Length: 241
Image (cartoon, rainbow, N blue to C red; front, side, top):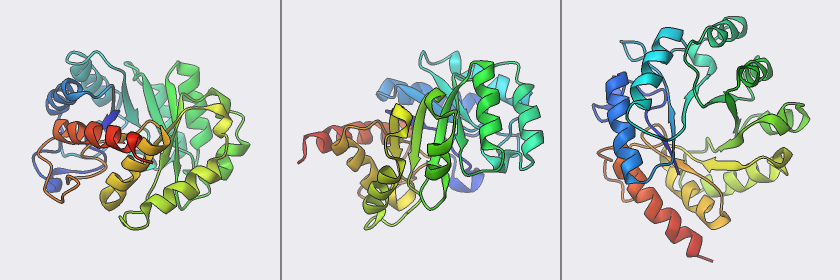
């Protein structure tokens, strides 16, 4: 179970979403104690914006790694640096490398970003979003067999349709170059997709990036609380028909 600590959320999401390196390290440690086995995070500027800055990435990774023994990954989302060439330059300037980094395959320059990460020895999580042509692009990619895993990302936030959208996404992915698949949803679709992942025996994730609420609609107090609920629900789903 991966924990996604913060995502692109900022201060408006509330104090429970960790934004500083220290807050991310504390939240990561609590989530790992609750059972998380992998970390995904978005390094932030002091004003809470996602960044690929070498300095911020280094400080964040060092803070989190000082508290947890599990792999730590970051985003390379285009919103952090919209210009593909500048995004590549930022990544190549990193002085401290994550264990893995997510690359959204529908974004401009995705394959070059993935190739640069692989050259650096960083595992690539191929982000395949529903509602995009990412699955078709990934199927044609020569880098497909070399990625660490596929992140099947269900962007349908409706709880009554997210599971069907997830099944369509998985069908579109097909064999996914034989790479492991981590299936997850977001907001209203987060819990239905997590339970589906359990039934299908797929890896999944949960955290304050994907949802701010528990399955019963109450506000989640922390990433650790979401991981505890996710592991309980994921196990229950595995046993369901």
